[in-house]
Image 1 (cartoon, rainbow over the protein chains, first blue to last red):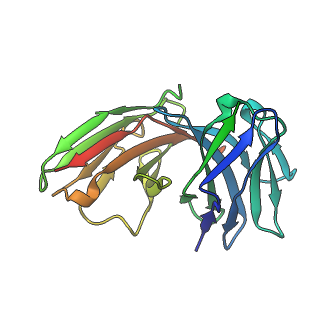
Image 2: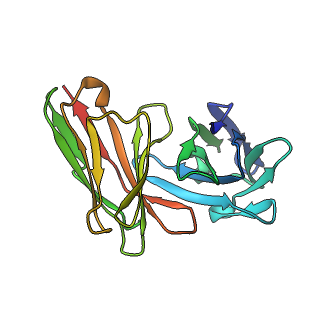
Length: 113
Length: 112
């Protein structure tokens, strides 16, 4: 069975500092991995994905994530946080043998000015 | 704006009533997903359509839930005999073979 874990309910970071939001997953086949962001009173927005190829993927708004197969992780990173990055972030995984996507419980990112 | 619309945005119904929600993705979205999201949780997969074919359905989905996508464009999700536990945000997402999904604003259901 596939699953995804976001171990931190909230991450606080000072503006200008690097940020990391953690995600680990479990699938039986090859993982397709995604990050989505939800701003207040707005719908979920796609940030980036890993399907195959280069382990480091770059996405919208300067975010990037690294696929680590041995650690079954897909952490979201940004070199320099902005106050406007404050939002709820969801990691999602899909096993290559199914159409079903599993979302984590979300991590609230708070960037402090 | 993802171009995916959902109607209605809010629905309040009494326990035992039937409700139907509609999702309109953009024309390029041959893939369509329905999710349910409750407070403090991530979206929970309900079902998946590729064009008009329903290819996957969550085992969590009881027989009271049904979804259709008759012409491979818009989709409807019906809940029969609603229960208080059905209160949630119902999300629709469109996509293509590139795997990412584009979510609509959701329909918030409150069952009283």
